[in-house]
Every structure is written in C-alpha cells, then in structure tokens.
Image (tube, rainbow, N blue to C red; front, side, top):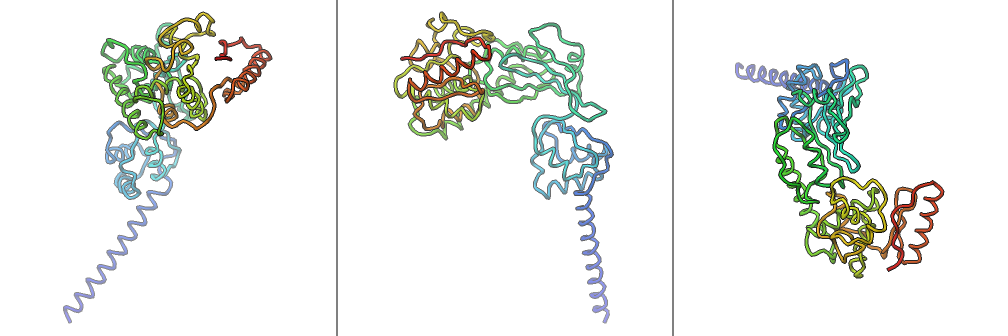
Length: 394
C-alpha cells in the first residue's frame, strides 16, 4: 500500500513537472516571438568575434530583450547561433527576439551607430562620416571628404579617433591598386608605410573592417588573400575550351570585362565578344586598355581618348598589340571573373554603346557600323561630345 501511494505521488509529481515544463517552454516561446520591451528603436552593435552569450547579455542590459538566456536558447533552437554578422544594426521599437536574430544574422551594411567609411570609387575616393539621427532613427551622412580636395573636416578627424566609431573600407569593383593605396593612406589613424603598389588585379573588391593603429599592409594582404581564393574557385568551375593559358590571363580578361560595362547582366556577353576575338586572332580593340596605357592606373582620364593615344603603342593598347595586355587594368570583382570564365555562347565580335547605359552587340561589321551610326546620332541629339573613335574596320 505504501509503495502504491508512493508510486501514485511520484506519478502526480512527474505530471506536475511536465505541465510546468510545458508551460515554461510555452512562456519562453512567447517571450522569444512576442513584442520586445523597448519602446524606441535600438542600435545593436555586434563586434567581430562576439559570442552569442555576450550579445544576449548586452541586449538585455540595453533593454532590447527581456531575458538573455531565452535569447540565447531561442537562437540556438532556430539554428542561427553560428550566423552572427559584425556591424551595427537598427531594429524597430518592440522588436521581438526572433526579429532581432533575423537582423543580426542577415548581415549587410551597418544601419546605425557612428561609422567612418572609406570608399574607394572608380571616379574618386571619399571618406564619409555616417551616424544615426536620434530623432528619426535613420542612418544619415554627416560629412564627406575627398582626400584629394583639401583638409580633413574636423568632424571626420574626431570620429576617426573615437574608439566607439567603426572604421571600414569599401572597395568598388574596377578600381586600380593605386587608388586603393591612396585610400588607405588617407586613414590617418592607421600605421604602416606601403612600400609599393600591389600588382594590378590582385586585390578583391569587398568591405574591410579597419582598426585604429592597424597596419595598412595587413589590409592589402587580406585583400590579396580574398582575390586569390575567388580566382582559384572560379577557375576550378570554368567552362571548357577557353583561350586562357592560366588563371592570370583570365584575371587580365576579367579586368577588361569589368571596365567595359557597368551593366552586370552584360558581362557574360562582353566576355563572349573578347573570347570570340581571341579565337579568331583579332585584336581586342578595347578603349579601357588604351586609357590604362595612358594613366597606368594612377588617376582617371577625365576626357575622351585622343586619336594619337589610340595610335600610340603601349604594352596595354589593344588597338596596337595582339592578344591580352601584360597585366590586368583594374581589380575585377567576382562577377566579372565568373563571367570571363563562363561567358555566353555567342557569335558577337563587336559592341558599342546603345544610349541606355548598355551596349548593342553585333555579329558582322555591317551590323556594327549601323549600331555605331545610331550611337553617334544619339550623341548628336543629346549634345554630348563624341567619345573616342570607334573601330569600324579590321
């Protein structure tokens, strides 16, 4: 009888514990998916290498989540604990823990906090100070400085020195190695003298986190590491029968494709034109290589190409040399490298601007001459200066 009562009591206790556990799980689930405690938008900062536990504790301390343990357990449960992305991210008022996890694991550009952004652009470099507007919660540009244009604004200098402000460099596709070095040298809080310009094409366009007192050369090493990995992976998955002897030749071609079009969807077509020309023994005859022969990547040619420059023999002038130039003419991004190694299959051997920002592609010289005439008429109607002479015969 005693054992029967004991067993009955244990069963009752087990049932109570199970009910309590189920209730606790349901409560935790509601806490994780329900509206959060913050009545205002929150700027959530995730440091590189931060642990999920530390992030949860910080969110609880700033009132973005109600319970750090539930935040961590819920993130583990939905399989996102290994997906944290560094940066500063704005979340709306009353955001649930689940919504916050979605924001801090999706990545992308930072959307709040103070940030000094060094932007390496094709036309110019710029140092941009951005911050969160406390009234609107919007991420806004506060100041902008072109390092080539004058003295550094006080606001940017102060933010660069501020420990809490992020420093990052965004390298656009198609910039030259000289432009990257110029941008790094403009970050006054970094150290390390860059002894020589890295090989053209060897740096990966991407976003890089900078640190106060960090070595500029270490950033260049990381850029080169990423580009080497990208090129190796894309070379491994290349189409068969391409006219490139090695990955370096593909990189040279990718830099030309990168500079020839700003329309991403056109890259495989542009690559097909140059592949067809190489296979037929035709010269590439591409203006960006002429420009590189003039500037050697040190600055931009802020005017049209002169006939004398088209006629001048340089190692890069593909109107005058056969095959590929000896080096890349810029640092191509992954998309241009991929297009170069997996071009469209076409019969195109010519292309010219079509007035929409893209190009008209042609199979024959007659088609090409007609497309050139249409482009010249567009230039005339819009009052644009005629660009460099377009090759119309072989």
